[in-house]
Length: 106
Image (cartoon, rainbow, N blue to C red):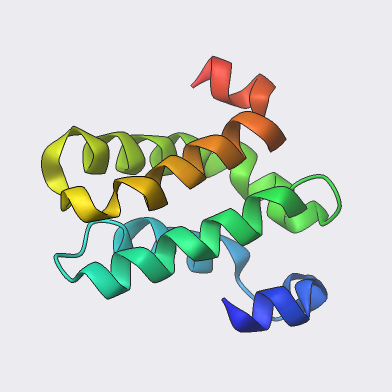
């Protein structure tokens, strides 16, 4: 998360598998440990605003965002602790703000 805040062009590295990083983040949203879920939520709230400016990120979100939305809705629906709801809400807010056309399709 801190690396993404300080150096968002990290996702432009040719040897970085953005899809794998994204999928790991989605899986981490389903972990039982609150600190892991909180960190994953923070990752996505930093990542989603970069969809338009970093092509590999935009492509991965376009192709895999539905899985992110599903994980967030499952967390809100009872899979995650109530103390994490604000963090899941931040992802929904970021999706709505930065990926609205895709969000309505998903």
